[in-house]
Length: 321
Image (cartoon, rainbow, N blue to C red; front, side, top):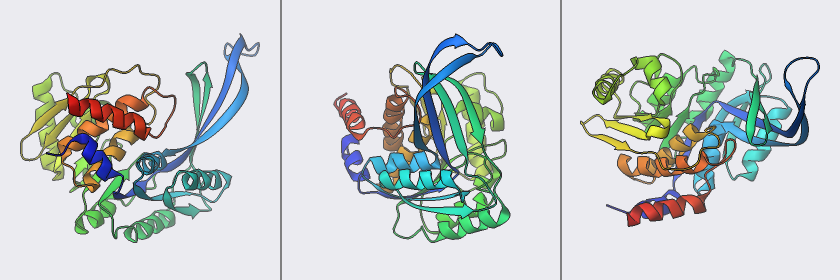
């Protein structure tokens, strides 16, 4: 079996299509020196601001950061936030088709941060329109040629109302389709290659589990119900557990890193898994790479693309071990 470092080298030549809920992440940074006289809340003196691609756009940015080719398909408004997002994606080397709908606003998440601590998050969003969702599917179908994998990044913003068709078109094209799911009904993901819920999302659909035996029973029930090839449950500080349809179960412990911010960790996991599968890696290789990448990004503030140099060093250590 190839080393993880060898797989990472192949991932730089992978071609991946990402479709999902795109958004713009805004950060306002400042110091807190006093409490407001108007209410018992801190007063933040904003000193600087920053914008980053968020949601499916962060997934795409993680793939492009490896040097791989990524085509991003997402629905947004026809507004200044969409212009900012397009500029950021272009600067990150992400080939993108932002389907602009003048009847909606681009989703924006504003985070106010002081001393590396997030004080509040403010969301600006509107639900997608039926016409916008149809245009998204049409753009996606045009982006299935000459790629090795499809990633579906569902943030529940309404842009993936036709996700069942999106999964089916990808599988019909002979591609692995990896889904980061949302909500309490996964039936629309039927037939996907792999879904990657975190523990909370998994329990929302399958019910709470008390031990590893119950987790496995519920996971295998979901695999059977949805006709999946595999299910990956990400479990924060407990690592991640992969259940494959043919019976294998693999648990990968979390890497011991200081955690500053888990924002975007799920984006990194699915980006690495999708890019690895596009590079003809096995599922086991893919989750080891994804686990190492997630351990790196939680040590950074906010949603960031995993630095390739750090990931390469981490995988080299794993290969030695």
